[in-house]
Image (cartoon, rainbow, N blue to C red; front, side, top):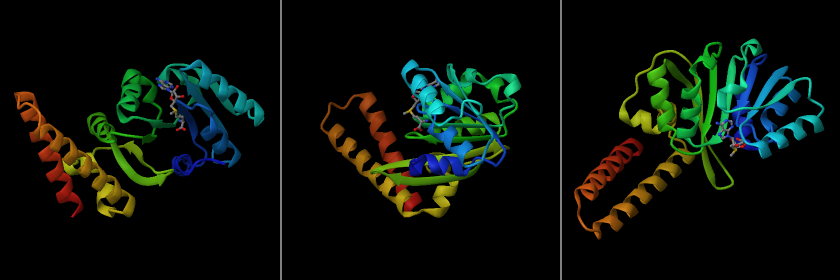
Length: 227
Ligand code: SAM
């Protein structure tokens, strides 16, 4: 059975899409998409040999060799022109790694109309990348599973303007302010306050002063947003 997290990612894949799942590990997501008849063809990309082999084994085990193509490749290099991929999923990594994958081969995105990205941390850098590159956030979800909080961002082509609060917290998530969202940001504020306290005791260099200023700013920004 698929995790709640990957099920949420799958729920945003349009029926009939041609999907590339980058950093697929066991290829659970592409196999699920094919089994559920959401897609008829998918690519599972992996850059590390071990996970690539698990993906390969899983696809074979599920008898999906004709429908899920597993490729050992770095990021978007797993996608070939004649695949006609229109949807990319990248899940279970940090925001900065997801952005670096998107930035490394921008041409691979030419035929793509939807990105479903699930950063474990730092979703903010994905929103910044989207603004810079002509993508808009169609939907966003925050969910908790096994005591961990995850965000899923669904992007399509378009322009968007976000303020600083919306870039950090997500405009849809901020508008909704559900329980998981509040839990995440209350936790973040507590962490920042703890860091602040510990650096109060440190030697007050210019660098520390800068860090304090930044933390105060973040705390104020988020406290204001969630009140
Ligand atoms: N996507 C799956 C999920 O969400 O459960 C697996 C997540 S796993 C934590 C991250 C995977 O991304 C690892 O298997 C890793 O090898 C792979 N990965 C990291 N950088 C990559 C890259 N540049 N190209 C392809 N795969 C990459």
